[in-house]
Image 1 (tube, rainbow, N blue to C red):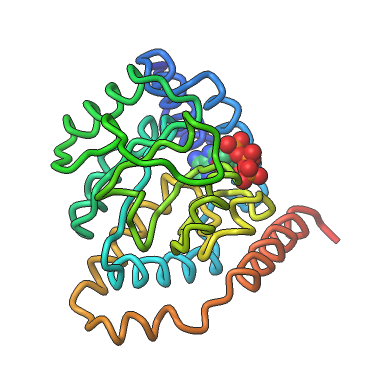
Image 2 (image 1 turned 30 degrees about the vertical axis):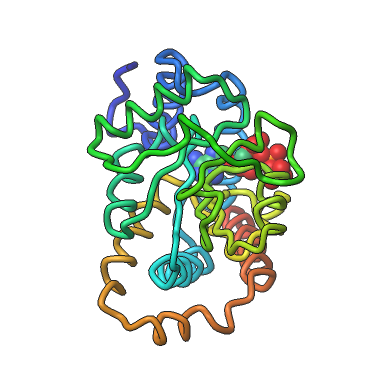
Amino acid sequence: MTDIPKSHPRYASLVARERVAEGVKRGFTSSQGLIAQGRGECFDYLLGEKTTESAARATHVAAAMLLAAKRPALSVNGNVAALVPEEMVKLASILKAPLEVNLFHRSEERVKRIADLLREHGATQVLGERPDAIVPGLDHARAKATRGGIFDSDVVLIPLEDGDRCEALMAMGKKVIAIDLNPLSRTSRQATISIVDNILRAVPNLTAKAKELSAMPRADLEKVVQGYDNQRSLRQAVREIQDHLNSQFRS
Ligand code: ATP
């Protein structure tokens, strides 16, 4: 990878860009993943490259929802594998949830590379290599899912997902938690909980919250989730962007 000096003002963003580019070179991220990363970077810039209040609140509620789930599952695509493989394995371990490789541009080789990468990072339960079910309403390659994983989960975490798949999972009656820097994306607007934050910050924050809440009885976790309103949270995210932008200029 290119050597980026830590003192560079855009260090975190440049490292992320390098990781996704490296993911493409190593064959687990598709070239379209570079475009998704660029779009994410733009929204992160608008947010001030920090975890906002609304994102912290959504992360807290998402941790409670995942802990209260009967069958949680975590989805991993090529960008997620490039950016936070180790962090996703840690989250899966705290939640005792399977990781399932789920690709928009599916190739069996890429699925295997990502599954191997997750196993190298210590994952014990990686699904997606032998799909045995179909998510209704999607075209065949993108509909592939696995029993015991996303297919029969009650709560599913879908970082950096596209709107169609989010909609199809919601239509199956699942609770869907998105991580997406774009508060206006179809995914963000449809999900049960949208964490409008960079996955680099969101996954470690989610793991820390899950650890903090792990001893809470299910009834109390459900109370944390009650009353959360995703549309209100997205409106707040847009206001946070506006406030950040207004703060950049002298009056
Ligand atoms: P939709 O169909 O939901 O409207 P889209 O067509 O914009 O979404 P993609 O192009 O697949 O979806 O991109 C996935 C989403 O992931 C984008 O909204 C982008 O902002 C977001 N994203 C990209 N990189 C990151 C990142 N590092 N952290 C969080 N979100 C990201």
